Amino acid sequence: MALLPHFTHPWDVSPAEARALQDRLRAQVQVVPLASPPRFVAGVDVSVQDEVARAAVVLLSFPDLSPVEASTAQVPVSFPYIPGLLAFREGPAVLAALERLRGQPDVLIFDAQGLAHPRRMGLATHLGILLDWPSIGCAKSRLWGDHEEPPPQRGSWVPLWDGDEIIGAVLRTQMGVQPVYVSVGHRVDLETAIDLVLACAPTYRLPEPIRWAHRVAGGETLPVARQQALF
View 1: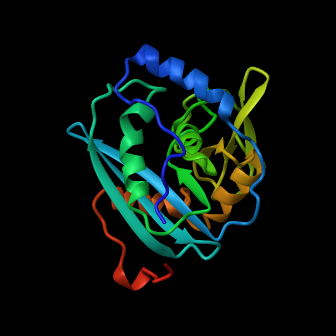
View 2 (view 1 turned 90 degrees about the vertical axis):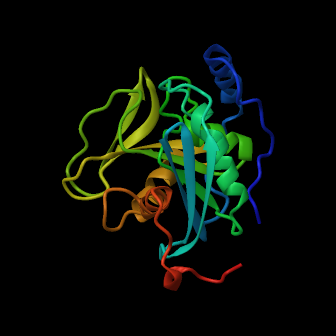
């Protein structure tokens, strides 16, 4: 079953219009626990080369993290590269890839920000709202906010602050590695986001859904033996 937007908006807008749109969408964010434990999670990653965005979505079963299905889409990029507005460059490609997915994930994990964004509208939040679907941001670097260094042990985390507001978590997924920046996208809470990212990262710094999505976005295909006929 394709995952389609609940509603959409024009993507060919000016940077000022894009910021205003983010401010309007912000009021629709829902920070709530998941209704039930997930059975499937999907990783989302986007690479842009020669002004073409290639989005990959890889569906994994949970909690065993076996790859089930992958879908990709390539969409020409018309919006300029502006930090904080990457959803307008990458969003259409992600939506196209999700539309091609046969299986339905219970949660989307984006290699991107969620609420850890100056207007609380990273790619994970922006598309989570459009899809009205549970989503989590798990970024490799900080876009916004301040934090202390988390302890070196796996599973340790510290809050990511914007003034007196917690906008995410700085999570150590493996002993001694650089942390990742986890934040709510939509229809999850921060505790759930932290727990799920950690459960999806049993071996490496990045959670398996994102690792697979990155590989597929770069042109790799899922091994046939690891694809499962579940749908």
